[in-house]
Image 1 (cartoon, rainbow over the protein chains, first blue to last red):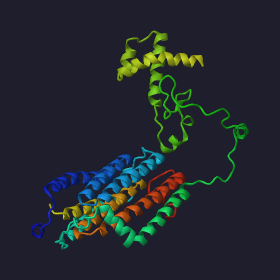
Image 2 (image 1 turned 180 degrees about the vertical axis):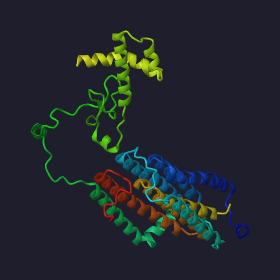
Image 3 (image 1 turned 45 degrees about the vertical axis):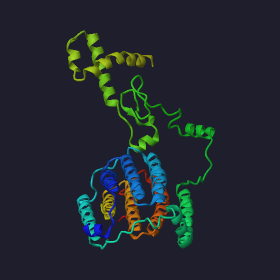
Image 4 (image 1 turned 135 degrees about the vertical axis):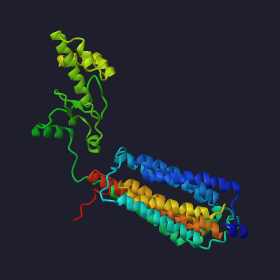
Length: 299
Length: 99
């Protein structure tokens, strides 16, 4: 540090402050990317880190790259990540169970070792000259970059163009699904349903009537067990079925108990105390209970 | 402040990303950690560019960004097609060829 100061290159105090404040957030974002359980949180942490890195590029005199970083990385790449997360299932949290024993500890140890090696390497390197970009950026950062890209690096530039086109084609080829047979018409599918005889009428709707009608809650069969068939197949595949049948069964039991008490005229003060564990729920069940029971009788 | 600190930060971010690649098993998060490593590399390149007083480092960082964009397209397409056929984005589940 002192040698560098003698060599005459340190940053301004403002840049130093900016660095120390933002570096903390950058590292926190990186750690969040690795440690967050849900992929969406990881993606958001990574987006934050990328924005901070863009600020660092700007501070380092790479004005064009700073803007490109925000436009391409946080704008395009992270949005692509979020799109895929939506496709794949946003709540698909990582399981925290280790499949290889001791893998995580080993990975952290190796990471620490690797980091120490890298930093020691940087510390030992003779980085005594810092020229700064004042000369190189004198004609404008974008102009300088353009001169380099289109003169010295023009071949690499053309190659990256070819690479991008190939990647675009690859993206389409990989995600495109070829239809090998004609889509059956509605009439043909109706005929097939009747022929198979498994599920002739349309699939039952989700939701527990008079309590919930969300699409991720399975409808209940007459005996109170959830009917998986009522929930959308995608939600079933993702394991996102919300189960309220236990509570519904408890409510049902409470209603039956009350009916029995009413008919038997026995133990009347005892019954409210019986399911008083969740008093709010039991009163709620009492109000909603008559509706459910009436509907049941109607059907 | 010494501008070398940017290099230390870059090394730290790269290390965190590398550890994440090894630790995490959701393919998308692994991919995000790879992106983090690429970004850390870019920060080092930009700092080197400032250190040497010419723009070549920024050119290389620019090409890295282009290649990373192409890589994201292909990688995410692969993840989506694997998810379609196996209904899982975990890298552990894609073990069909394991003995």
